Image 1 (tube, helix red, strand yellow):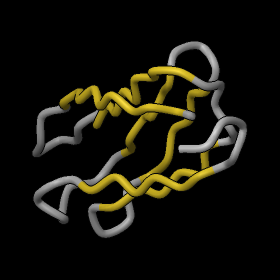
Image 2 (cartoon, helix red, strand yellow):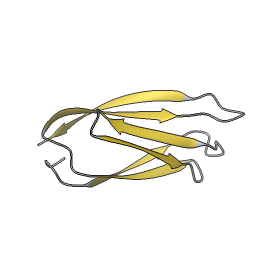
Image 3 (cartoon, one colour):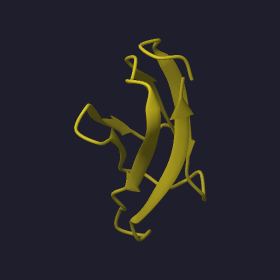
Length: 77
């Protein structure tokens, strides 16, 4: 990633029949929630500051599927 350059992130859950929403956060600089559509949620993240960042994705869950959280390190240059 390039410092202060917006980028897109697509989150997928399995099975694709899962419903509900996904939250995506990067520290205190970005946090959004999007509904799942066919098992996918798309985010447009504004530019992050340079350095190591963690993208934390949380699937909230629904009546048939448990929620889950994943953390992914990224480097912003």
